[in-house]
Amino acid sequence: MDQRLIEEVLEKNNIVDVIGKYFPLKKMGTNYKARCPFHDEKTASFVVSEKKQIFKCFGCGKGGNVIHFVQEYERISFFEALKKLAERVGIVLQQSPVNVQKKNRRDLIYSIYTLSGHFFVQNLFNHGDVALRYLSERGISNDTIQKFQIGYAVDSSNGLKNYLLKNSINDKILPHTGLFTQNGSDLFRNRLMFPIHDHTGKIVAFGGRILFSNQEGGKYVNSPTTEIYTKGNELYGLFLTKYDIQKKDTALICEGYTDFLRLYEHGFTNAVASLGTSLTEGQINLLSRYANNFYMLYDGDKAGRKAAVRAASLIIKQGYKAYIISLPPEADPDSFLQENDSEKLEDLMQKAQTLPRFLLEDSSLNLEQRAKLDILIETLNEMDDEISRELFIKNISEVFDISARAIGSNLRIKKKTNQPQPTAAPQLNKHEDEKNFICYILNNKLIYKKVAQEIDSTYFFSDTYQSIFKIIQEHIEEMGQISGLVDMTEDEILKNQITELMMIPAPHLTIDELLKNLKLRKFQFELKKINARMHEHPEERELFSQKNELKKKILSLDKKIVRKTLY
Image 1 (cartoon, helix red, strand yellow):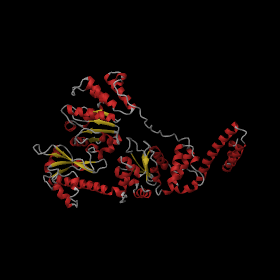
Image 2 (cartoon, rainbow, N blue to C red):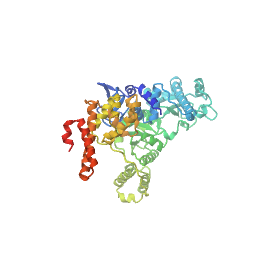
Image 3 (cartoon, helix red, strand yellow):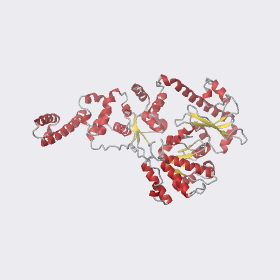
Image 4 (cartoon, rainbow, N blue to C red):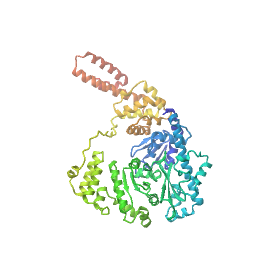
């Protein structure tokens, strides 16, 4: 990616304006503050600097520039965040010729789904009295209808097709959209329409529900797989609820559209629906971008409980925490909340069970004790992380009152894999001089040329500050926005530390004083090494010469400390 293009995107997207579109910021002095969107907190520790065009949370440590914020907040790739910000300010990102044709067709299909969504919403309010009455009877508010763009497909074989043609859509693309039958007529007719959004908010599919019990076709008609939609990879409602899911580190998973909407209406804004089908690995991988704790809220009947067991097992295999909420046998999330208040469901969430506990106490599935253990052992066999496996074995052992050794004897032997260990944040307090020096450069970019002529990265004893200085060496002169340095490393810990240093005001020292401190530290260190070598090898006359050169360098920096350092 052309660095100049990134610079242009950074320059034209004011970080305060961008973040302010996601949640309100409060001006505090020269900066702006808010409660951090990346973790739960009571006191605002999320700071945005308009002057430096960076954000930093002093609670959880996350930080970066405007591209990094969108990347983290939306849980999308760097390029996707860059593209989103480029579109915001009218910048066109160049595409490779090989992908242009395919990209153009995908973009066109996205546009068709957006137009179709508008069409169905218009129909709901212009021709959908029955559909509106149905939604009203189900207790779905107008606010929720608008947020999730619920619509209505009229009973016409060509209503949508004619609308798209009037909006300059070429009919040759229509067979590729999944919105029409093989004979070219509208797939959705006389149905309540639920648009399915991807996690970025684009409509990629629809689910159409019948409004009359004697209506032809199944209860639901769903979009088929297309270039922009694979059923097992999307979650209903995630595009709006991902923010609360991320803050709470908890996702509430149900199956159907109406279950989800009922939950949302009752304040459970960290919920998603698995589009009426069994939870898939693709959906778990998507949801794991935002949370590690998954609560299964399925129907209370035998089929629902069986589906909850399967989903919880799949989640555990992927390395995440799964809990099952038990509803009464005759209830689903929708009907339960129609008859009970939110507090009642919150109580059930507090009592949610781990998979072993749920299986032990369940009687509806008619499973013998051994069959229940077989389900858990099969789950263990599919787990890759050894620590997670040990913890799960302990949980099973405690719940079923069986020794961990007996459980382990039933497992298939798994080969050990060399998993990369997370890098801990280094302790940097010992290197205050280096920290001050980096802060000064980040606050005074133009001073770098003077610095570059006098020192290099070997003057830094901290590996972290040495790495940051190398990034500055390589990129600072090409940076229009100093905040662009944040994206010059893939190391998340290093990225957050650079942002933190950018937030710190320049120290009350001159650059000459800072340079002198760094040089003095290095010369003193080298002098100690020479003295140690002279003690071991007094016959090496070259060491005396090297020591004299160092003494001259130290003397030129500060005469007061010569007596303390020369001998």
